[in-house]
Length: 209
Ligand SMILES: C[S@@+](CC[C@H](N)C(=O)[O-])C[C@H]1O[C@@H](n2cnc3c(N)ncnc32)[C@H](O)[C@@H]1O
Image (tube, helix red, strand yellow):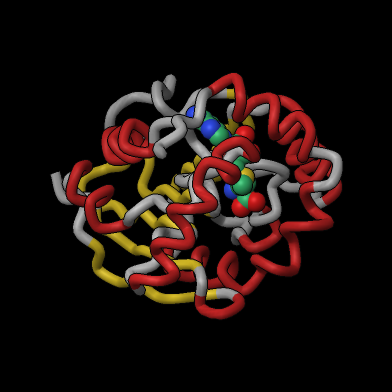
């Protein structure tokens, strides 16, 4: 049974998760975060968009020489990111509440874009990736870090089985990587398995337009 994730459900879920998010998702997902920023290959003055920035757990990993814009649907998650920016005294960061399926940015506005642990938590991952492609310059780098449906038969079936429950909790457990990338016209340059049990995939793509 495929249960659709809805925007209101996501907003409600992250309103509840915001106060405890960092306790649960900081250390478990830290190795993937460091690898994801590394795969952006940031150069001095690069403009970077982080989609679904959440509480801003990636913020300390960005160099001060890049210009970062972070967007998120959830005001409560973004409030935490604002606190983190202030705590780290970062002057190179702009944060905005925005739906990643229809961004208020011009075409080709960013050099690079990143989405960590977000693509399976958005109601419409295809629309989000299409928007990321639109706002990133031709040949710019797009990095996605996420759990995707396992290619192993047993694990994949298990992820299908728990999918209705996970959807109610605010994410999709069985989002398949290859069809997703094919739908948005992205080809991975690099795919690396990261985090505990190699259960998450870091996907680096070049935005060929
Ligand atoms: C699992 S959290 C990941 C947060 C952060 N990227 C991290 O690495 O910790 C998923 C985030 O995606 C955000 N999100 C979900 N749907 C969105 C949308 N349509 N537009 C923007 N952000 C969205 C949620 O509010 C939440 O903060």
